[in-house]
Amino acid sequence: MEKIARNNKSLIQEKNIELFKQNDIWGNPRRFNYENIGLISPSTLRYINVYEDLLRLFKDLNNFKICEIGVGYGGQCRIINSISKTEEYTLVDLKKVLMLAQTYLDKYALNTSIRYKTMNELKTESYDLIISNYAFSELPGHIQDVYLNKVILNSKRGYMIFNNINPISFNSYTKEQLLEIIPNSQLINEEPCSSSKNCIIVWGKN
Image (cartoon, rainbow, N blue to C red):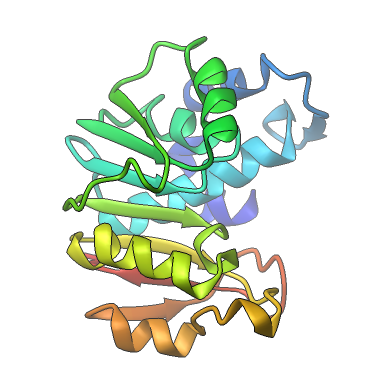
């Protein structure tokens, strides 16, 4: 929360933070009392932190076509589209995960048009922004290749939180390899750091 307040204090002002807290209406998440903002779940606070990163790196997400790889229950999508007005937001995951995300997101009026796609339903396409919070880096290499060829290498910008937990048998790409593969990509620190080996890979930043 300190990092959010330092970089974009408007995100934790009452009008916006109350809007973000609506993420916790459904699913009965555990909430904790944080100074100056009150009760909120840690997962919602983490999604706000990612949103702050995105605004700082890319300035304005309005009218963006966004593709998120690995979507959880849809919380990141809802945080972004509670304020930003993206043109289109594509969520990519396993079918059962997408069903959960749609059930959750259908309870909100969002500032975007939503598409739900499995890996094989995803077409080769260019997006304004690719997002992946840990998910891409946890995939086996041959699955990572699908996403690289279909959307990552075709898209203008990207934000990928990278962790290093895969077994050797996955033959996943290292962060060094991804920096060579993705044009104009670079590493930035994850703040706050969730693990000593974690980092963020970005490209196309302003």
